Image (cartoon, rainbow, N blue to C red; front, side, top):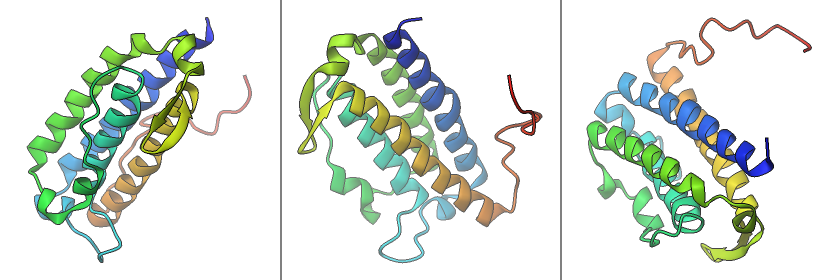
Length: 168
């Protein structure tokens, strides 16, 4: 398998098959008030994090690599006035998964090597792919932690897998 094809598989796996479903699971377990709760002004709510993740992937990946127009208003993702309902957040995550799938063909060797400005940073396509995967995973973990704290539930992300298996 070529590197580009492997990256397509990993983007799909890490974002569409793992992180987005985990966030959706958390949203389903949380009340509307839980989704928008902020411990203090320096903290982000789960709702703000979902808006932030959608905006980030759309700017860095969908726009920069996929060629769509960048319409992101980053500061709005963190405003209390940006509060939308759970249904909207779930639908936005579903739309994002489709947009990611649609943009995957744009991940070519040339695009991975090409430098461009994103959010004021000079990025290659490869650095963008690494960024969106690690950034999404980071905030997915925060959302999962908060959900476990509020609900007291085991989210069972690894289901019935035996995670103590070692070696090949």
